[in-house]
Length: 404
Ligand code: PLP
Image (cartoon, rainbow, N blue to C red; front, side, top):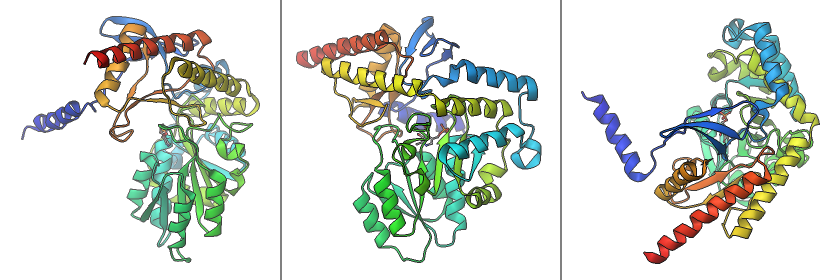
């Protein structure tokens, strides 16, 4: 059988639909963020990255780099095993204590990524709690959806950020079954923010546990970077807070936090925790320093807020519509995969601006977009340059439109 022909047939469909993904070959340059080298067809060129999830530039922070280097010298590269068999290192436990403290919880549990933490935690909860029903926000991330699917628990989808719909769905369930309300704080592609307090109140009314993904908020919201739940003063009412070490904290890895019993339960039953090599201790050491830094430093968060506001204002002045959402994510809707790709290619080729086109299945078809994430390290000049480039593009598109 010609397997390559089978693969290529499906890849061709993706290409025909405009949903095939081309990756930029970037080389991050330490100390230069948001600049990076792009290894493109025309050689190596410096570009400005406008779509990084290293939201605060912590991936190149001197303290974080020093912590990772020190830990490599002290412990070597890998962890040496799964957490169960020789892989649990002192640095992992120090990081788990730091994370528990960040969210004001009794305990925390590390995973190799945020994706794995959602997948492992939700699949374990849903499969091991008898008759469990998981009520999942319609906008939840693929990692949560996959975890719920794998659990084979009954899944009820409630309308995105719609507390009345959640309540109606909770009220329709038997009182004596375990219920989990699973949702996110900042939704990554629209950048909108959940009404956490109202959701918690409804969940409490119906005796449901709350599962909150703060992946796009940890490090960035709340006085210590504990996320939107910290900012809104409701972290203590959330049963489980999940997060990543790979975005604002600038490293890699994922985690959950909650009660001792909850974390011990996931530790003991989750295959996605048990059967995989632990994160390198140096990664844990770097993440811990990053978290500790952002617990006491407001500088990065304030700088980011300033640049986000500045970009939005400049887009408004240039007449470029963007989604208003109360977060640091600035999506510019294009609504067509080929046009989005064309715009992104043009920005890279002509302006040395890198913004990845966002297409299906990351967003629904017809809502393709450019998604900008200003950091405290983007300068005012970077913003002005970006908006000039977009304005020029918008003018050209209007011209093409008029001629057509
Ligand atoms: N949860 C949400 C909402 C995400 O957007 C992502 C990734 O972008 C993840 C979880 C996975 O996190 P990680 O990148 O650490 O695997």
